[in-house]
Image 1 (cartoon, each protein chain N blue to C red):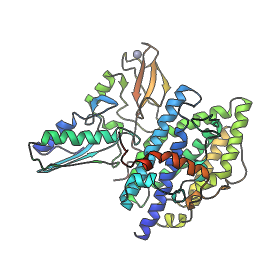
Image 2: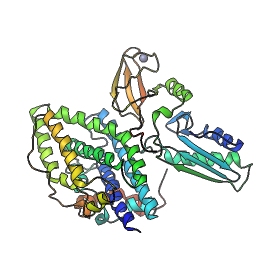
Image 3: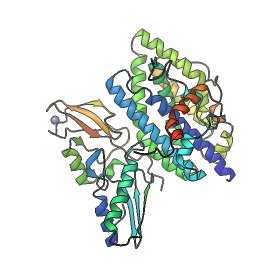
Image 4: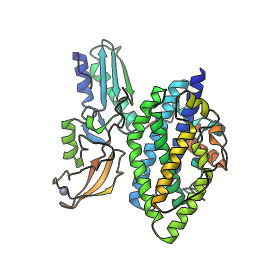
Length: 174
Length: 263
Ligand SMILES: [Zn+2]
């Protein structure tokens, strides 16, 4: 991720901290690792975002939210402010981009975060977000949203969700 | 438009339209899948797949400088480049009116197409058209879960009751008769591989046949002939009334009100 340079860029990051995926309102797009690049100059702000899952219906809402909140917050800088928000697949979003804070927030909300390091095809260990038990059953790998699976904890008898690991399959390209 | 761009466009249409119509046929199962967990899973897969179509349509938007909704919702059927097999209805009736959809056909069509899709994506990883490389990498991260899902159904039904086995075999024969239409790159196929946009058609086909033979050997099934293309070549704009009907449904809202996008 790009290092934050100017005060304005720091300000934009603060605003992005308040933007969430409407299907997971407790975690910001920054914590999810969706923010790849922020450029903020005198009258121009550019934000490059990485979509989590390509069919995510929330993408347009997130984009609109970023624009609106940035505009409202930075109006004091200059009313001629131009804001561009782009979605990009380069690099692809992967679950290792989720921050430590983000992972804790997922767990606290009943969603086991994906393993920090994952290789495609490897078994994926999931602990219950409530009691920490590893004695869990996968009920459905496809859950209520594209990025989540449904599980059941045989220890504390709670249903819960887990975020699917998404690993980069082709490191060699740039 | 340069010659290179014209060939890129042809390939992008194939990729986008395959996923678009395949996702639509999948979405028609909503509420009708064999059980509730499958309903959730299948909807999620169809949603991802529509996302994949959308990625390719966005590449076309940039290339053609035409709004993406125009490309997906306002083309004539003969301008579509999807394989005919993917446009075929799930079965008699429609989702509002006594649907008698064929689950075996759906499992076989989805699995066979997804195996091909996986091979095609791997080839696109080395494409000379860089935006395609990025798109392919993104799609592959999701594709993995889809492939696993359909393999599970395939193995289970192929080794289930006699009736299940017999229905599955009928479905394989049916899909086989037109799967050649998925494997072909159409009349510009030679140029596509000459320009290094994608591997040669023969190579993609060979890899698909290898993987299918492997799959068949695990369920004790064999088939002799090569896959056919009985209903025509969708890559060259040949289509059936199934596509015409589907496009009428898919673009109904867009045609009646072009502002009615987003939510
Ligand atoms: Zn538990």
